[in-house]
Length: 308
Image 1: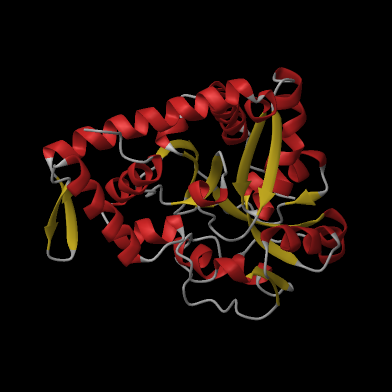
Image 2: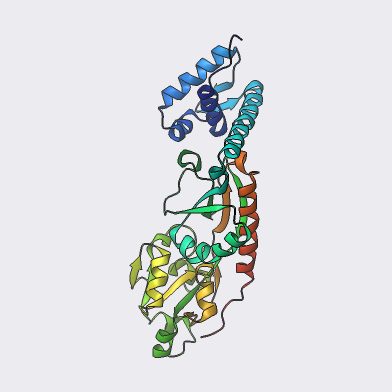
C-alpha cells in the first residue's frame, strides 16, 4: 500500500464493527447511514479486503474485519492513553453521568471519601435523567439503574436495591402508629412518576403487588418527576413516599426519615457501572470502579429499618 488508510476511515469502521450496524454507527458519529456505508466500502476498496458480510438487515464481520477491528480498537486506546499522558489535566479528569437522584442522594455524600483517597483525580458529575452516549459525549463512565444490558460496553455490577415506605419523623408522630397496609394507604401518598410503568418495580402499585395486595388502591396523591424531589417533599412532611433504600439510607440512619411500616420489596433493576471497553483498564477508571464497589457493598450492608 502506498499509504495507510485515514484515521477517520478506521474510526468509522471501528464504530460500525462494534455496533454491527451502519445505522447505529451513524447515530454515534452524527453522520448519515449512507455516509458511513460509503466510507466503509471505500476502506474495503483501499485495502483490498472485505470487512463485512452484508446479510439482510444485519452485518457480520469477516475474519479480516474482526482482526482489523481489534487492532484499531487497541490503536485508538493507545492514542487516548498517550494524549492523557501528555495532557495531565485529562489524566486527572474523570467524568461520570448518572440519574440526578442517585447523584445527589447517594454519590455526592460519599465523594469526599473518594477525593481523600484519590486527590489526583478530579471527578466531574453530570446529573441527567437521559441516557447519554458515553462516546459521543466524551464521558468516561456511567452509573446506570437498569437490567445490565448495555451492549458494546464493559459492565460491572454494583448493587441491588429495595423499596420501602418512608416519611418524616414529625409526620409519623402526628399520624400515630401504623400496623397494616390499609392504614398506611389512608395517609397522603407521594409518587415518583418516572417509576410508574418503567419496569423497575419501584412504584406503589408494584410494591403492593409484591406483597399480595394488588387489590388495594394507591393512585391518589402528589407526583414528582424525580426521586430526589420526592425525597425532599417527604422530608418536608408532605406525606409518605415509596423510595429506594439506597437513596434514603443516610436519612434513615440520622433520623431525618423513618419507616412507618417496614415492608420491604426488591427492585427489578440493579446498579451498574458502565464504561467503554477500550478504556476500562485506564487507572482513573479502575480506581473509581474499585471505590464504587466498596461503597455499594457498604450500602447493601446497612440494616433495613425497624418500625417507626
